[in-house]
Image (cartoon, rainbow, N blue to C red; front, side):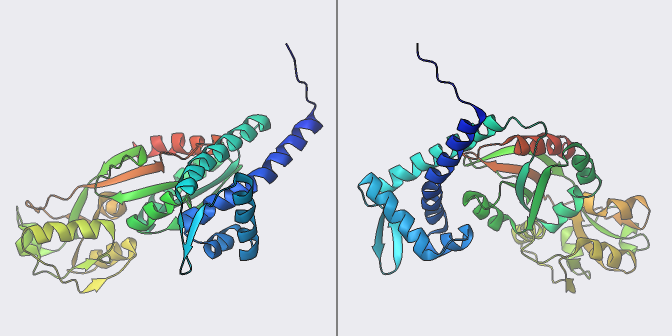
Length: 314
């Protein structure tokens, strides 16, 4: 049996060589994910000529053509599709190997997140401070976005995880790390005359003055779908992106709104607003934490998922 022995200097040299070899594969994957040489160059911080040179180098080493080039557009050849699959597997194995070699005393790393402003306001207050106490060497970058844009970024590996606040989403391309159904209500100030009624229909509410989030916001879209199902429509007097600003406006007026309970709970608990007894509006809103099925979960990602799984389920 032959036994190979390496000292620390040998391991460092091996790691550096592997990083250099995988750079070309990383560039190739980036060109595929961002659908072009110039876009990949911008994301990687390279010049376009560098990207072109690395792709030519890879094609030369593999003795094949990876892209068809027509009218300034590129598309993967059949060999290119095969190489892309293997390149992703190689890069993931390479990252796992380096992680095993590091054996860090503390968990560290960078995590990229995408979520709506409502979710950001909810989970990045006291919960984040607690997470920070446990994992001071994990750096988070949060991008605020709509649901469709979040999934697009997840597919392109522009973010590692997404928090959605929308209808219940299931897609075999993604793994649900944690989820929780959120209660949602119409609400008004405590002296609003509508609170004198035991039951209110959605049709009655449509004649009231509303302040709502923009129509492309997740729970607003779900409300619009329910209205359309009943052949109804609401014309708000104000559309604004900040849900806390909406709460402030409602408590001091006769206007009404529609938001998840976790946004309004401080105003509700202090007695400044009350829920309206609407009996025919069935809107289901879910908070979900999702990751792409092909994403390798580093120790930092696992730590974040484990921590926020408990937070979401509270």
